Length: 298
Length: 269
Image 1 (cartoon, rainbow over the protein chains, first blue to last red):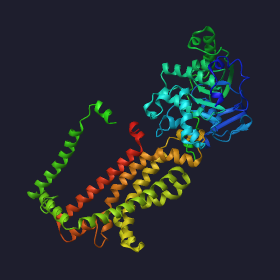
Image 2: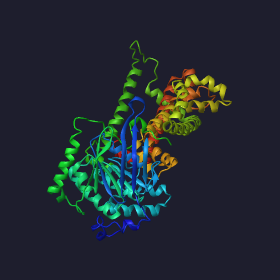
Image 3: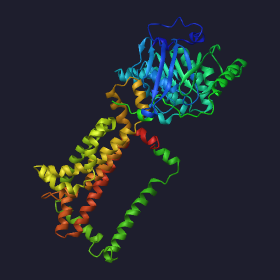
Image 4: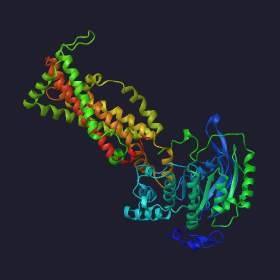
């Protein structure tokens, strides 16, 4: 649990100093070369992601930004191991991704808490899968809930929580596995503006404490600029990176950032990048591939 | 849940109960007038229908004859055995078919073919297939309960959100754990719908099954009353089957509600 319990002083300068990170625990370096992902079958088959190369450093916060249907969620699905790439290399810490793993935690847009488990059992699910006994996993789950500020709703059903609270439980449920990668697919997309802002700040706060590699998919430019160390901007059909944009705003970041001239300038730049793709509305892709393929065999 | 209902100012429990009792009383009243006045509408006639009074005295006689308990006991044992087997087979097959396209392709065509066959059509074959009449009767109640349970289980399994399964895999669930921890609880509300309907259809098939009974059973009692033209007893048998069927379905539903407390909160989406 040590990496989860770093004090707040450490969090203050985490972005400038990554050397104190314990290399023996979780790394989370992503390496992709000539990575292509095809979706659909037969005549409807298409290339959702085309020959992309990228590298994400351990502990880095990267946003995949692009219009709906550009393949960013597909790429995230491949990182999670739910979609198998057609070509190329996709590795985490030198290991090829062959399927889903608790080391690569995934948070979906909404409604993936198990409705039949209460909050604490949802968070403890990963520990149960590892065979941790009930008392121990409840203790750890409550501690994790404390980290996301939700220890007082532990015995509620997910349906009794607001959208923002449900997403916090999702994050806790994934983080309890101490993943090398935290993968988030528009996790705050369904929330109202106020809650979304709070969740973004909470996420930065949590990430400051646990510093796992974070890949965050969004189509919201403000969100990407506020959160990320670096933005990979994607263009649709076939999905490719059109820009690798470092975001060097100091951390910790506050909401004042979004009204600074530097922020506005980068936002203008992103708008220009994305405006080239206007006029083409593509259906939203999912990190699980296309609907007919979502039936996952036992 | 109870206090939620109260704050929404729904009709009180007393009002609801009196409305429900009133509707039953109205049915009895219509029956009473139709049978005592021997109403004959041409297409339907009540001139041979026993009156409520005759049925009440027939119930009284049955209660005093010491025959009620053996009748009830035999029927309950048959329905229960057939139903339990149907529940085990239906839920197991449903889980397998719902999870695997291969199993669906292999198992569904013959099951779809057997499904529309009514219980009464099974009688001759059941007699031929099973050495004891008891076993053939249990088989017939089994066929009645099997299909609602099977189809609702398949539906429940297929309706489990693939994202929940994906999430569980990302949290380290093995294929067996996915089945036990995600698919089964996810399908449980639908499985209980099937179990509740199956309970009803199991009773439904009872008269048919007990046509081949020698002596005991509510269905046998009903059928033999018709054969010996004891019309009031037919209605007694019908009412008993109705009551027992309703009661056992209600019981299954309550067990289901108790096992899926989270489900009612979701607004049955």
